[in-house]
Image (cartoon, rainbow, N blue to C red):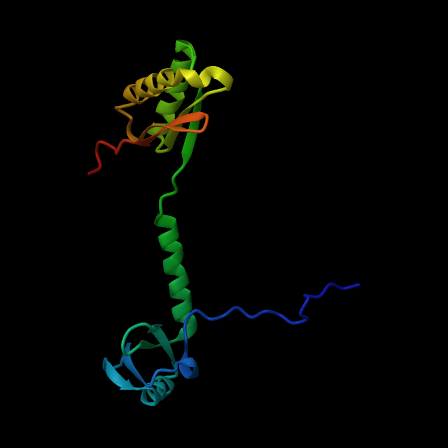
Length: 185
């Protein structure tokens, strides 16, 4: 027994740009290679594109009049996709590492977690440190504030405090962002 889509037909993805006959404006601002830029009638623009064996693509539909480019549509789509990939690759991905404390965290545990936080900040990750209050330990809020302030002061040369200690439910949280590299401006 073969499986079919519920509707029985394939779904065609919608094109992101209007091309040729799909452009509904009466006048367009025409641009492109081997084209004199200017405002022309839509039929004239289609004829100019057809004469060169290219497509008329609406690249700025919100402009008055809409901007259309005479270009090979498949090549244009390929270049747009390539630009999007480059933008995505250049975008920085923010990684947040969490470090958990209790209100009664010992000095040795504090130093151990401090060392990990230092490494996280050196590699460029943000650090979210929080004190988790369990049961009746919520009465020791000032211990949590002191612990987190001590933590942020110890990491001052590796990162800057992005968010002051803030109590959310049973957690008191701070966020530290990595300090900019000394060579970069």
